[in-house]
Image 1 (cartoon, one colour):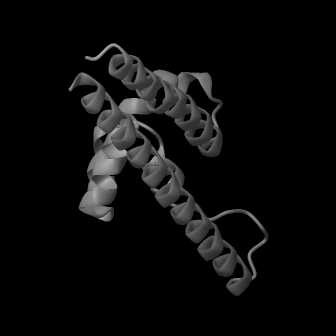
Image 2 (spheres, helix red, strand yellow; image 1 turned 60 degrees about the vertical axis):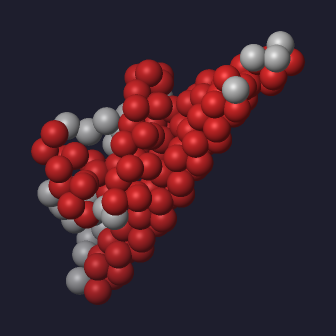
Length: 132
């Protein structure tokens, strides 16, 4: 019974981490595309526009309360749930990554996948072998 719970927890963690990263990557690509189109349309000199909250501030792991409230209003319920799980699972690893949003999401996400995906999966197999 414990092995089944560990296996389901492992799968839920992996699914939430992958869904959250895929949604982040899609938003980042969309934001970059919109920024490029706006620069071309306005014959900008190449400096990025100064957005109050862009995809980087919205998608940083474990944002502050103000950004979290904005993120909740802009994301769907499923996306926000996955982002909240991602925030909890990646929180121990965010300080390991650099300042770049991509580095934070990739490094902390991979470390969380190793610990919670592979680690819980391994514990599930050990529990199954012991009959627990």
